[in-house]
Image (cartoon, rainbow, N blue to C red):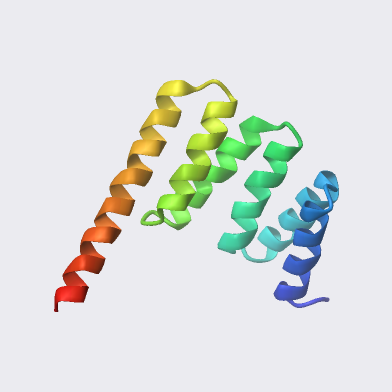
Length: 115
């Protein structure tokens, strides 16, 4: 069996080439082996969105926020999928969380730069 990086590279190629069904299957295969493979979770959410399956995109993006609760980008991704699904309050809440996390990161960087 191919190593995880090879599996990921193959799935990513499918996604970039617009082969969403193949990408989804490939990312699911990765996550069957390692359910916490963050990059695969992130890309699977995008593959679902590209396929027009916003319910699964949102569920997968929520999983991404669980895996990376301090990453503003995960909440930005979630916000985008909520927006696409016309879930405005949820989108605004996720975007606010992303902004808060980014401000927190900026403050920490300033503090570290002064030290």
